[in-house]
Structures are given as C-alpha cells and as structure tokens.
Image (cartoon, rainbow, N blue to C red; front, top):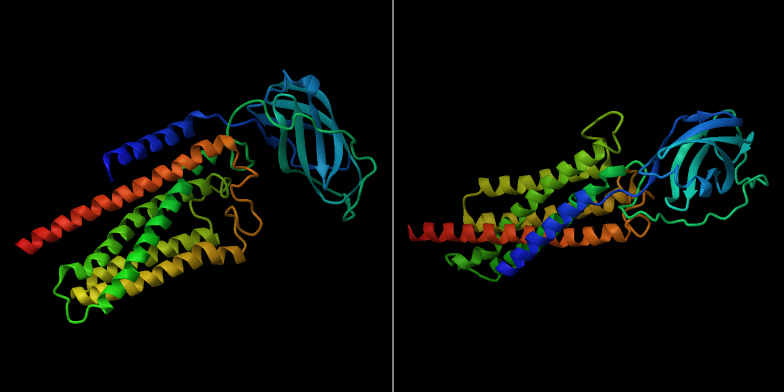
Amino acid sequence: MKNGLKILCIALLLYSVVSAFLHPLAPGIIACDKSTVQPGYNELVVVGYRTHFINQRTSMLVFLDCDSNRYCGKILEVIDNSHVKIGVDIPDTLSSKSLDIYVNNDGDGTLYLPLAVSVNDAVLVKGMKDPASCKFDVKNDDSTYFGYPFQPLIYETIRNLMWHVPMWFTMFFLMILSFVYSLRQLRKVNSTTKNFSSKHVYEFDLKAEVSARAGMVFCILGLLTGMMWARFTWGYYSHQWWINDPQLNGALVVFLIYASYFVLRATVSDEEKRARLSAIYNIFAFVMMVVLLMVMPKFVTSLHPGKEGTPAFSSYDLDSSLRTVFYPAIIGWGMLGYWLYSTHLRIKKIELEINDRS
C-alpha cells in the first residue's frame, strides 16, 4: 500500500475507534419493576436510560401495547429522570399475554421496551380489537438528543458494531481473494505442462496462502468479539462465553476448516503437489464458508441478527449516527486487512529469494 493509503487507513480506524467510544447512546427504556401483572389496576415503575423524565413530565405519554391495542398509563410520580411510576388498567381479555411499554415525550421521543410485562390469568382472544384502547396520536416520535440508537437487549454493546462486523467483512474479502488466487493457481498449473521448475508457477499459490493467513487473523478477531457480544446480550444472565447457536457454531467450523488448510500445506513437501492440493482444498473451504455462514443459518433458528426474522442492522436500527462511523470502519478495517496481506506477501517473497540464492 502507498503511504497515502496507509495514512488514510490509520485515520479511518482512529476515527471509528474514538467515535465508537465518545458518541453517547440515545434515550431508551431498560426495565420495568414488575415482569408479571394481573388483569385490573396495576402500578408499575418504568426505568429509563439517559432519559429526561423530570423536564418532560408535561408532555409525557405512557401506555402498554398489545397487538396495537393501547392501554393508557396514568403518571403517578416522576421519581427522577430515569424512573416514572404509572398506574394502568389492564382488561381481563387480551389478544396476547405479553405487553410492550411505550413512553413518549417531547425531548426523548418514543421509547419502547418489547415484551415488558406478562399478564397472568388473562383470557386470550386472537386478533381482538379493544374499543377501550387509547385514542391519541404520538407526537415528536424522534429524540432531540443525539446518540447511537437505543436497542433493547444490546444497549451499550452496540458499539461493538464498529469492530465485530467490519472484521468479518474483512475476513470475507481476504478469503475471496484467496479463493480467486487458488482458482488461478489451478488454471496456471494445468496450462503449464512439465514446466514446474519455474518459480512463477507457484506465485498464485503463495498469494492464496498469504491472503488466507491474513483472513484467519480477522476470523479469530471476529470470533472473539462475537463471543464477547453474545455473552452480554444472548447469555447475559448465564454469563456464558459460548452459546449453542448455528451462526456461532458455523463460524467455529469455518475456523477449523481453514486451520486444516494450513495443516495440509505443512504436511506436503512437494511443491507441485502442495500447490495443487492446497488450491483444491481452499476452493472447498471457501464454498463451505459460504454455506455455513450465509446459507445454512437462514434456514434454522438463530439468535444472530438477520436470521429467522431477527432484524439485522438496517434502516430500522442503523441510523445516520451509526452510518457515519460504521461505513468508515468497514473501509478502514478492509484497508488494514489488505495492508497486512501485502506486507506479509513481501516478506514471504524476500524469504523465497534468499532461499533461492542460498
């Protein structure tokens, strides 16, 4: 990489890392003091995060939602900026036993906690339209406070988006590079009959190996950051570092498949045979990576975003504040991956030249 591109790579990475830590999180709801309630009158304390309940009391609306049926909450007490006590009447007949909580005010916008409370002993009537549902329009839906979008369950760990996802993108980029070089190596060897004394015959094999090694670095980093993210979201209460999820298991299998690629290279001493076998295996490894990480998880139940109806980062939750950091992070990590590949390739070529001279 030229010096200008290296400076740009460092600048993009510094920008994404610093911005990931400095940008605050937008207001949101993190909990309710009761997870289960009974039909009838209930008093609840809603717990906010970076909210401004005291200053926004006059404009505040609170309601529970059940399949678009709203049950208005009366504000009994604004305890502080993060806690508000409400009273709400819950009918005996509902279309679902799980209710969402919404808090809206002029400053914080609309705050939402899905499946906040469960109603015991309620009679279920699917698709019911309750005439007692609140009739009002929610105004000022967006927060006036700048910050990363508040997502229930993810919370502050949304910052990991700037590392985990770009690392996997970089790994895919490098493995695609390795896959292309393996294809070119097979084509070149097949078209070069009885000419294996030429050192240039194995040029693409060398590039395939080096790009795969660089890809493995980002594969390991992606696994580690994914484990950390999963522990504080999917396995928060059990504090598990690994959860039996198809996406995580598939990523581990991909790591083992590519690790076997380097074991294969180390066990074959003949250059011609190593180049041919490695290219064939590398093509197989790439196909398996696509199947395990992009195809199979779409047909099984997974907690990973984008699988089985679970929303990935899209227009729903990837807002402008995230895009201004996320996209530069992808470019920066991708450039770092290519920088690592090109540097390692130059070192390997120098080593080969020294060995040839000796």
